[in-house]
Length: 99
Image (cartoon, rainbow, N blue to C red; front, side):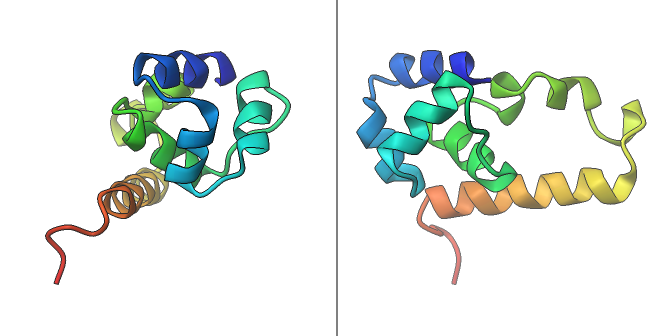
């Protein structure tokens, strides 16, 4: 996952400090995540993906393999994952469109 985050960050022309600020983590945390010595919480992974304009499944391929209810993920977990991803997207966008 760390190498995928690093590649996506570089593709987005961001340095670690910029990504860290955008997702509310320290630069050291981004360094550790990219090195594979730390894993971001799921909601931060969703936020990182949103900021980098990729899907969480691009960063963590097992999510694509799970694929939701169709592939056997329990419905309540698929809904929870969708809610976390949606909330992270709203946070990354500053809540635009919300009243």
